[in-house]
Image (cartoon, rainbow, N blue to C red; front, side):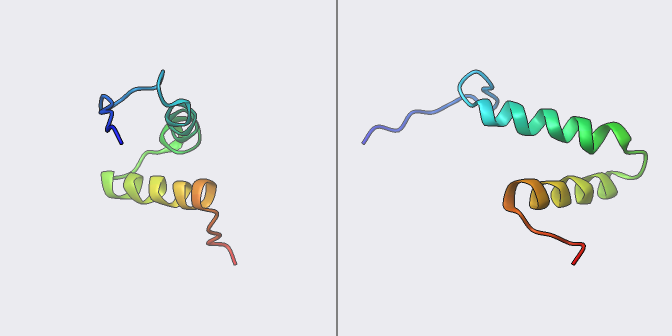
Length: 58
């Protein structure tokens, strides 16, 4: 087995990263005007819902 180290940010090598970042910026960051803590919580909640599939509304 060979380990291949990728750069910290490598959208050309990881298209999922580009899609997730684009959606986060569009859905969460663009509409945010609170504290950094609130933004962090909003990002975590968005990732839980869209990536993991958790539902906080039920």
